[in-house]
Length: 554
Image 1 (cartoon, rainbow, N blue to C red):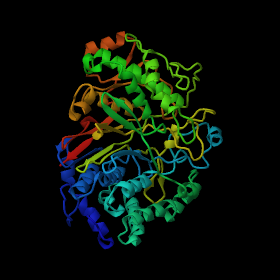
Image 2: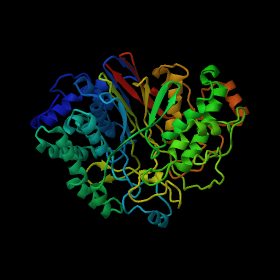
Image 3: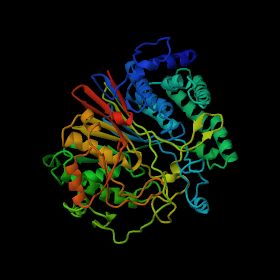
């Protein structure tokens, strides 16, 4: 559905209504959005994400003729309002796209870089990279990632896609909402001269934010208030389209973003686990949990040692994901005892253990959260995205919050993830797409810092090895570990850590403790997953209700 410039705002408000298939002149139906549940099924399309009204925005876009890319863009923009304590307009969003026309999976690398002033020497003089405030802000990447998604894969304008976000902002529930609404309307005005040339209009929006008036406003405000972002950082920002990394696992192909995220360690874990018959061991049985945890620990040790922006560091990704290396690493797993050491391997030489391991630790910091978004349409297109950005600063009267992602760098000379200007931090954000026989099967997004792929892995095993439905998987008992170097201020590892719900069977817990696992009960949901399963013309969507996830389908 196309919206001419004179009626852009009217269309945007109307298209957000949950049940709107045609243009309507009525306000947002907030009660309908609140009625959304945590699971849904349908034959035409599905959305699962965080805030209910963001899910409603995505579903309305699908129902009015948009595709999965359009629905994801609408959902992500609205999530910056509904989930603003977890994700901000000036944040980031890595996106995995299955393009049905090309039958290909692409990565939209929606992660901003370190500004030119963000040097190792600068942060060393400050005593380290702070975990909040203005200094740890990376270049805002979310908006350009969404514009790239729409430009390359979508059919909608920015004005159409921003309608759900505007409808929420116009309620003025927070003091900054009116300012962000003005900023979004300025971007819509910047799109107007395109006069029906949709792709040109999207470029005009990007130019206005990154190279036009807003870029100068953001730069000037940061300079006046001790921030590091300058106009040149914004003007040279680029959203890369990259190839994903993938492995085959029991007849499925699992896709992740590259080593500038933590995603490949999930693939390395699968490589090790394919050597065990998990299905025969049983779902969430002691041996299953033990083997899964021990494989994750080994892969996480490699993550902490090797992962970084591949444009700046030589990450041995082929070796890390090879079956030969996995076999070497798998042999380190004691089937009866939990490891109490961090044990990175040596993929460059094909050795199971690295000779010298530097035991460096950072200042530590809280493991902040993020949000989720998965969308699938009836044409076969699928999107998995993980939007984030938190603990930052509101930029003057623009209504734009900046995140604090530079805290995921370290300042250790010689480490692959040491901060450098123009470099992407190695982030935890890690969406997942899964294909079966060349067709989309699963889309997964998880919020939860270092636990994202711990939960994502369990979602995959639940479906592939244990034949659970999405609804059963997102509500099943979950477990995890802090046996890792924290991605927020490099928190020291808690060796032997095993996190599990207090509802776990006492005999199960006792068995795991007898193996040496240091059990800690987690009262809150262990991370926040959502999932869509696609098959035989049917979409099954679900998100953990305890974690405030929502799902809709039609």
